Amino acid sequence: MKKTVRWRLTTFQIISFGFVIFILVGALLLTLPMASRDGRGAPFGDCLFTAVSAVCVTGLVVRDTATAWSSFGQAVILLLIQVGGMGVVTAAVSISFISGKKIGLKQRSTMQEALAAPQVGGIVRLTRFILAASGIIELTGAVLLYPAFVPVFGAGKAIWYACFHSISAFCNAGFDLMGVQEPFSSLTPFVQHPLVNLALSLLITVGGLGFLTWNDLKEHGFHWKKYRMQTRVILITSGSLTTLLLLYFLFFELGDLPLGQRIFPALFQSVTLRTAGFNTVDLNRFSDGGKALMILWMLIGGSPGSTAGGMKTTTVAVLLLNARAVIQRKENVECFKRRIADETARSAAAILLLYLGLFFLCGMVISRVEQLPLLTCLFETASAVGTVGVTLGVTTRLGGLSRALLMLLMFFGRVGGLTLIYAAHAPLKPAQGTMPIEKITVG
Image 1 (cartoon, rainbow, N blue to C red):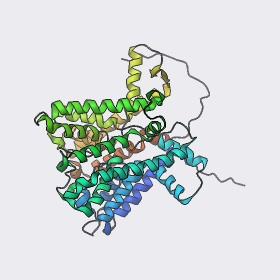
Image 2: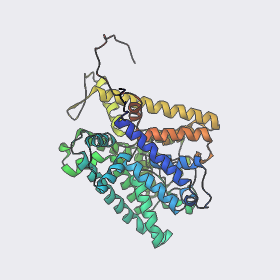
Image 3: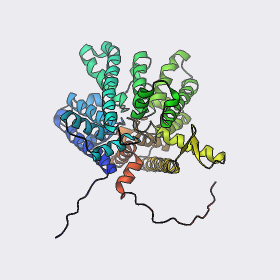
Image 4: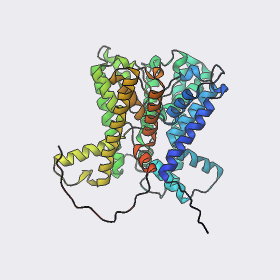
């Protein structure tokens, strides 16, 4: 009797397919006439691009969110942002919590991979904490933003605007509804508004730190030495990157403004370029050197297991620690009196190569096809693969091939390069033996 072969998905395939399914469902919902403000429906290409950008929490758009989409369309986009920010696995598990279904070992393993958790044990409790904390943070952000939006949009409309921008900021999505004042203006009307700048900056930062970092802070408070090594690396790297960019903007790119008027623009741009996608100043005003630095920061992105994309702060930290070990002629990569596994260092190098290769190759193709300056196109591809969403204003002018490349980059940046590679390959098999060593000169 012939045996039936059952195809079982790996956890990496489940995560990848989960994002694809939500993107397709979101795109189909956005094609409905009721999703468009004019009631005639939008082309599927525009809907697909918007759905990819929302689920991948990027923020690049080909249609202004406020003026092109109806309330229903905006609600669909916000739901896609929430699912993409929390991760499709976390979203699916939350449905299981509500329905009362038991979470099996396979589901727990998938949750572990989706959250970048170190172990399966306690993963359900961690997921409950993430869902509860996210809801509280997003509600708090909406409450803080509401007073700022009331004078501009009125008491009733300000509720929706506060909720939308709080969720978009926490999920590092960068979608906004400010197009009612000027299409594609992002948050430029609030460039000097203290409440909007501080509230959104905090939401973006908290969302980009990572769920495991929150849990560590909750369990150990301000006891630095009790934190996991990853938490300490994330906090130091994130703080350093934001501070360096803040000082650069403050003293170089915004030098034409009085010192008092530089603080909020410098602070907000230094935070939002870590994958959030909002902007309060026209980014075309920056020098080529400033744009190049912004590209580098966008590629780095947020932290693992967070609502942010990019290579991740830990990847950059491991690469720097590995370089230090080589320079100091140390056998092992070390940090906080702990040894970092060789596999981690190899993975970090692979991730760097993947991101740089894709970002540069796609930038060159778009520049060639669209006849645009290379730096402008590299800015766009870095924004896509880092799931940032800021732009120099060329997204709406791009053709079909360029948009397809940006969608692939957004998907790659949100799901993760190694996740996609592992999803496409068979599970790792133990080696039957080792090859002889032969040295090769580098450097």
